[in-house]
Image (cartoon, rainbow, N blue to C red; front, side):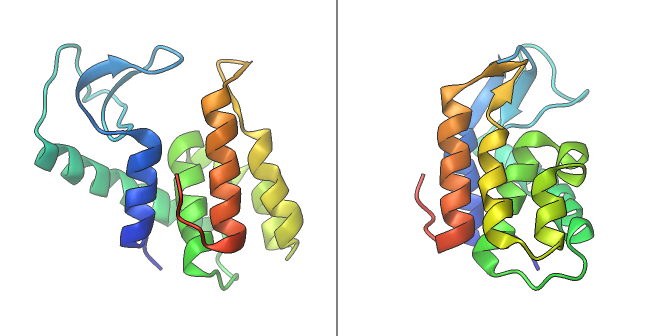
Length: 148
């Protein structure tokens, strides 16, 4: 399973697309669609095409992490997309160790969906923007509504 076009658009709306480097809410240097890492340099500027290309490469990593996390589950496309959005934001390590994933693999879908809201902090602080994002990811996961 791969992230759908609607899922890509969902993540882009959630993350935003910024064509120059900036520091995110906790001070991490970021560019494009939430891209971080050693290749991101202060003062860097990219084109929209470059941002989309980087995003696609990043998404592949998170698709793989979701597939690896739920190897025996048959997910709906909207569930897969919500999980990729979640992993994209919290990272594969946090996704892999999350109670959300444990409950999902136990077949406890509703209980797993409730876990999205627990991931609303960055740098130890509750961020309203993350609280709202998690609500939208949970809604996507449960209902298939790709609304940001």
